[in-house]
Length: 361
Ligand SMILES: Cc1cc2nc3c(=O)[nH]c(=O)nc-3n(C[C@H](O)[C@H](O)[C@H](O)COP(=O)(O)OP(=O)(O)OC[C@H]3O[C@@H](n4cnc5c(N)ncnc54)[C@H](O)[C@@H]3O)c2cc1C
Image 1 (cartoon, rainbow, N blue to C red):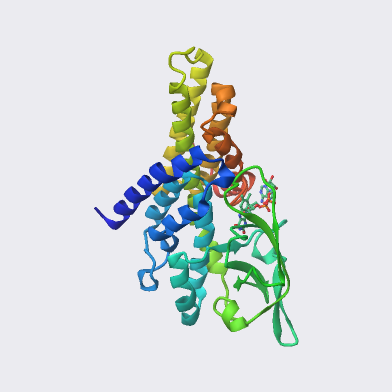
Image 2: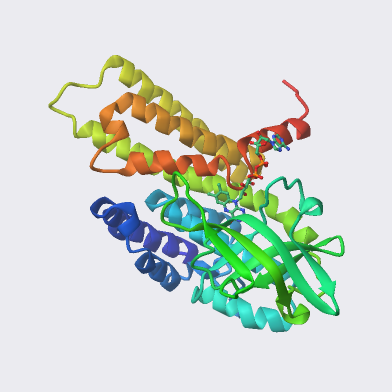
């Protein structure tokens, strides 16, 4: 068995034997997230995208997506924590000085501390319209601005913030515990097992050689450009994994009704719709993994399908779909919305796909 196969087998056991039962037994806010993250650290998941020479697993891109899928099948919050943490390494690998790589990458790989990634801002088109910026005041480098949604921010030891400096995007490693950083926890309908914050910087003084990835001459334009495809696929993987767990819950609830009134033909018709939507979702995802469909199309289709499948499931199962002791569908229903927004809204993806596609039938 290859390393990746072994890892996936261990992960499947972890999800089936630990994550699933914990979410059934406790309400979501009281689930012991720390234990899960500790196990994920033991499996080396925090170093999936870090080279072996820095202590990472250096997994191939497809294996990373399969990991995201499996984790999401257990609890969507887990790949969210991991995905945000993993956004740090590409900046450091591509642009970091050897000193920065040697300091940060092994710690990131071990998952000793969780990191976060701050890019998104309101009204942001691309990095040229970014409000968060670095200015030099009397020879000191100061970071100002606000990142409106940062996953993991409350638990993170460091946040990699993308900011504008002399008309270039640079990545800055920020310590969120400092007094010149403000974190505001945000209310939201789902994804309750991971923090989401507005993070603002008020004249945060930087050591340019140490805090700016690659120093003051750094430029992460290429890293940002290259991140679009892998990021879209990672969101698609999360949607596919979570949809599997929705289908499993539908089946379990339906089977528990055996001996009672069978599913009404209209409910069966809805199940048929769910199955078709799932098959289409899985097909576009696998085709994107094989490089035959666009990652953006897979992201938007899988995320929208998950949301639609959950709506069908509620309609099909009635009260059992909306509220059931199992709790899975209710949780996924709330969490699904996040995938249609995070990583770029569905509208943005549809617009981009339309602009890039020549209609040929
Ligand atoms: C749960 C969650 C976690 C997140 N975590 C992080 C994180 O860790 N780090 C981070 O940096 N960000 C994070 N984000 C931010 C996320 O990436 C952005 O919210 C997302 O990219 C959408 O950007 P926006 O909110 O500015 O909406 P906009 O892009 O402004 O879109 C809003 C709406 O405006 C319209 N619109 C705007 N522009 C276009 C266009 N070009 N084409 C078509 N329609 C358009 C559409 O109707 C669109 O749906 C997170 C968001 C969520 C919901």
